[in-house]
Image 1 (cartoon, rainbow, N blue to C red):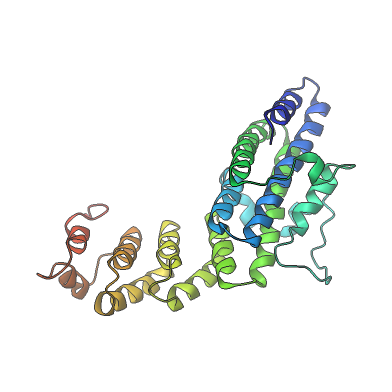
Image 2: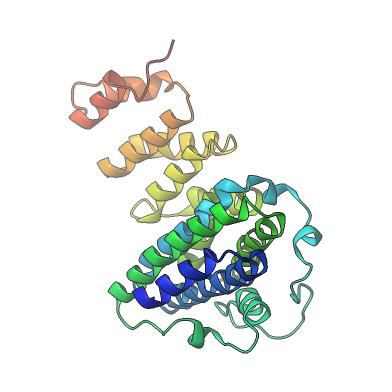
Length: 291
């Protein structure tokens, strides 16, 4: 997003007329959604997938933190006035951001997303767009606090992204897509389905999977109670069968984050004479002192 475009939107958001500010808010949110669409499509297309999902999640994280109640309300609360096809039986390609595009079309009548923002080519251009858009998200959040309609519009932006993510999660193109989308949704506070997916991966991924430590850490950070036994099971197995020190440390750290004490057999293994120094450090320097 060019600095000229950013300045233009910020100027409109600062308009003295309330009606003009509402129109500016809609245009700004449509612009943010257009950036999200490009990030989403780039994530699906590969490579650098983690780069794109991390920024896509970061774009919506401030909204999820500001309005946590969106996770607990029925979908119908956020439908009107958006023309979303929730029960559509039409063929949908995985990764096609159907609902985000509906959002753009509704709020930017007469524009398509290429008019709202030029299509990026390099990672640096995506990063610039991400930084500009996260700044715009914060500006719109501040503005929305002054007008009730604005809050609903911003909630809808998060909501339509979640719809796209859930649709992709229901029919992922591959395991990596499934893991990263579930991780994104869990990061944003959506628990039930992402937790089911990630717990299954935590049980079944091979020890050398780069996603195993990430999943354990994410579930622990979210204090997902049902992850305790799964993490402990993987930790027990790894302690006795694996030579992957980084994996064992990651699983042990995740288990600690759940505020649990290590079973005696694991403590003894960590403090054994032949144990790597990293294992001893986990026991001797816990994340927080237990009272």
